[in-house]
Length: 253
Image (cartoon, rainbow, N blue to C red; front, top):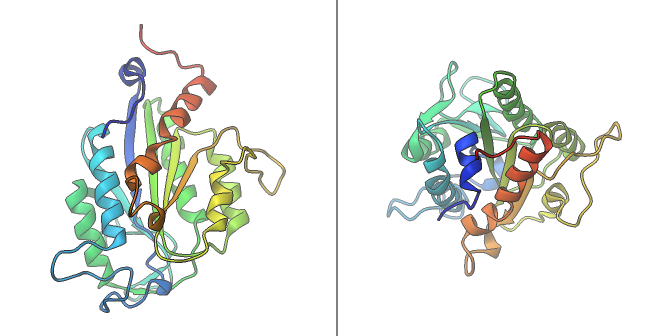
């Protein structure tokens, strides 16, 4: 699948430097050693919903990343001998967060399941702010990169206003956020973040988002229809172009 952004802009910008967050290592997913868990690693090789989302979305977006090295984080879990963390390196390292390719992401995800204690609650603000910091630093260095953050979650977030604040702040940055909801939870708060009904997000200080940067898809809604990739990426070209226009970045002639 190709992400249909004008080629002239592709020559102006590195379209996607792909950031990925592997979500929801919270206890609400269930014990990953049991078949009814959303994180269950099937010995037969059958992918769980998290793995499917990583693989399907990653396979498309990795082609827009030059070095195929991706920051990968988890949240809502307790790393060994540590407190609950809402943004930790999925590879277990305390020094670096990157993994190599989609295979590296899958391996880090599987390893993390058996090296952390699932906990909670589900908080988005920390990871969005971390992604925004990376995008902001890149912008300050004139790196001409556009970032995509993939969040995969099973739960209802408990920091809705903090998440809104983070998204409003991030709306000026070269960043889009894709959220996949897995399992049977009520995802109405995710739909609020998506802002598809025309009402832009507003922060606790009254600031309104400069553009929509979120796309949310419940995985259960696309299992028997359009692929999760098609649904997730539907708004990405328009979000990217809205950013380019906001910065008055012209395509190459």
